[in-house]
Length: 371
Image 1 (cartoon, rainbow, N blue to C red):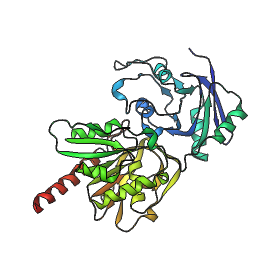
Image 2: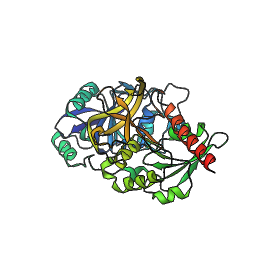
Image 3: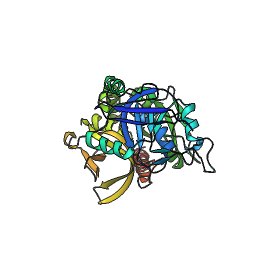
């Protein structure tokens, strides 16, 4: 067992001493927390966590190991990992590797044996902030200063860091019904799998792809994925989305894609105090008053007051009433702030992929009538 010490320092001066249990090193990033009880591998490999140090609120992490099937991207994206107790045993029949060896292989610094409840209460009170995690520099004043010198998340563009370098196709399961273009701002594999199960072939393209290039593929729909960073930093991409909207192609945005749509509609976004991250966020659909328990991972949100009259807010968060879903009143465009693909999380929101397919079915029917 590794008895090497580690130190976590926050920019406001709060520090936590614990034990290193993965790679040696020093990293800085925004400190956030995730409330999921399982699914730590999906959290680690979610590109939306780029440049963030993630604390898991569930106390025991690592007990079922890791495996290739549960990865949501090709690599872990977190800057660092914070847990109460890291399990040194992997007792699942699906385990292919222990979590600590996986993190060491990917050079991820991690700390355990700290009071994660105290850390989470602090973040909830003071907000998500810059932090630094080190197994090298154990001087509190030094590490706090390093946290203060690290980049802020506000106005930070990160989609270019996580996006695909080249377009690729994700095939449908069974007969192909529709072909869509997915703008990869940090897409998770389970989104592509959910679409594939509905007979959708997805061409995944880099985040910087011009609208004209995407439309030249003659897609039946456009999917704007999740991703990291501040949507306010994406002016060029917002302009391309506005060009896509003019083409009136059925469009579905989730999480970061939802925020970019909000900006493309003419609205504004803002930073939440500590964000929504986990699998237990209650969301109300305003049309029928139903409630979904949903999976979230975001630190920014769309300002409802700034949206134009032709955009309807369809869903709100019951904890803080922020915008969780939108629908354009005249264009075939829908979005949700949360993760309908879950991974990890509940599957209450899975039906939103079917809503997207319904938009494409309606558009196809109109084409047949006018042909």
